[in-house]
Image (tube, rainbow over all chains, first blue to last red; front, top):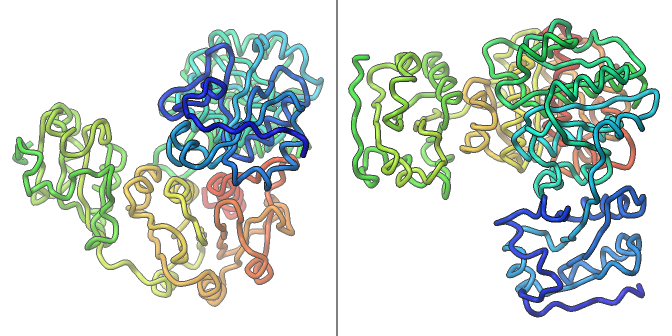
Length: 275
Length: 275
């Protein structure tokens, strides 16, 4: 490997300032920077960087003992991405004990696409996951992971949903936040309107849905819509779209939103021959 | 409500010693005690207590402002279960800030059933979720939540799996750990042997599974088996059972274990008319 290893001996070294104290704070929203942690996410960052779709790696920081085992992955980043290394003690002082698994990167996301433009660029045969009011970063990450696994073309959210570029959401998504196109903008009604105007059949998931999830018919363009944890989609929205339910035993809390989306995405991807 | 409210003014009061510092430690394994937190889990504890199937509530601790709103639920507990109340400051000192949502209970689980006995007591038409080497309490809780939602009769685990009575697993399960029969014992091979001896068709979930999950045929007794996070089920086990896969897009990490189990349980519950 010809890439130089830039040693960090001082946790306050300004070159890695963006990676300091990642547990206490999050970079999202600050000039489009984000934190990637762990090998799996670093691999997705390399893929996203290479694809030049608005995601770039700015710096990589590794525990020195991890460098050799990651040589092949590191070679996928262009040589102008600096590679910093640190001992375990320095690494822990930078990032917080045991927060990093020895693999961290600082990334940048350029100006996010607008929903209108993203929808206009989707293929004629499309599957979209839409989400309104998702407040939990684990759920957000899990929604992306499922969307990627079952071949969704994009994830669209309203502004009441949390930011998927948050460190934990990226990690739980196993990095698919970095590779799956998404746009977060406006309100739920506008989002539904945009999808319907682009000939998407919009199916809202709800315990009160009219149709069993296994009865959703194939369609060239399907959007699955999920709502806020706990409360789900409000009646005002359900009345404007098709609705589907996942049958379950009575007397229990309804399924977690990411679980419901996973089951629905699997079902719809299957009937539309996408997986 | 005729139940007396027992006021706690001292966080060191020995009557609520079992509920102190729940974030830092966990009671599981200590004389069969466990912690229930939040309204949803308290409701399941009431149901489990009433059913007299080896789960009992020993004490309830509420933020004083929560008492009135929970009157109906509290009435489901017998009068000999003490109800303690505390102010917000005392409650935080007992349980840790913001750990409790103002609703905590201490419970007891009697000697756990043995797998052999639990399997012998299952109905002729049965669905079982089996798990080997599950190490994460969130995943364990999520497996129970899915098993309950899709009508599994029991959850069976090997001893390499973590204890579902751990506080966080109970919470993530939305309390279904308290109502769904389970047994955790021995190794994976013994568990599979017991299920096969009881005429269960055992289907292991694996990205290398032979049959698509949607092609699993109906059967009077089906057991779905999932393996360790990350590595999944080893070849030595897969070679002894039927195997199924969940199709997904290539090039991504395989689905989270709880997600895979949820999709498989939904599928098998559907084809066997259980939901």
